[in-house]
Image (cartoon, rainbow, N blue to C red; front, side):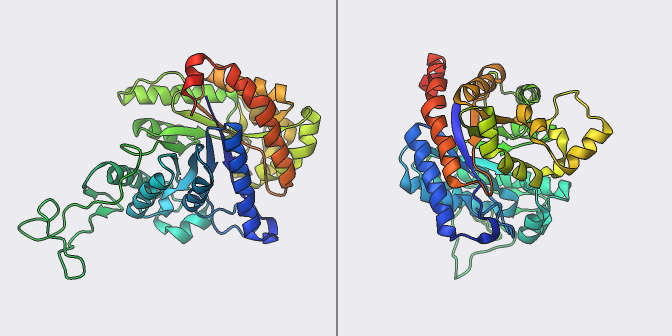
Length: 391
């Protein structure tokens, strides 16, 4: 099992110098490396007028963190690739993989917010699911081919590579028989540079929620990272991923290429953890409660109409606690992380212990308690084979 930290930096009311926000992310990353975490993950969000999600370019932040660390792997969770031109994204990923000395993990997403999609790539508006998914699927294919093939071409609904009709000109003389049609002079193939450090490309992950996304990830050699599901739901989703991979001709061990992100607060007991982090995590969950309470339900579980309506308006700590949070003592955290590893078989578990408004000192204390009293016990209880594979 690999342990990661998920960072989605904030600056409520834009009240702080943004350099202070960056320094907090750097401190988290350095602490995680020193503690023996396997990876550190970065979100991507735009236009946050409330200052709740304040990292517009995880690739640039990853380059900064790579220069300040030596061992920990840097992950994107996720780069919203429907907002990027696929050729530019492939170049940036390859460059970043070289800058990190091959420590890059690529988590990709389709995007959730219409505000972001409409202003960065209207064709990929998340509120238009069909076009958004088509752009996402084409981008995945183009990026993978650009990273792994010395030259390639692609024609899809939204992208054609190379751009049709381009011929050699004085500004960019392309006159090579491997690239140019000998009869027409039209450019037929293209290459991106540099090549990535990891071959054929860094590990790819997709942040998923729906069954169709899980199936797509399995068919396209993408690991999956989930966020809110209960343990029972995780087991069901992991099995769907494994079955979908098998249908695509790939046999995977239990839990392989699957991950979860969990909201975590470590303190001297359940009540203390709730006192330290409960307000902040619930503010965050209710800010993003547009999916409603269904994402926290066990398979087959139903809420009464009054319960569902009330929870759509405001999620409660008592409702989400046992389902999706890890708030408690180090011993409680060991139990919950071990359950995700042993019962579900997850390959990757990412923790997040800071939310908009929470004092950074409380985030650091929770992380340090995890590093000092939880992580060593998890490492000791791993099988020898699993422990030797860490890192």
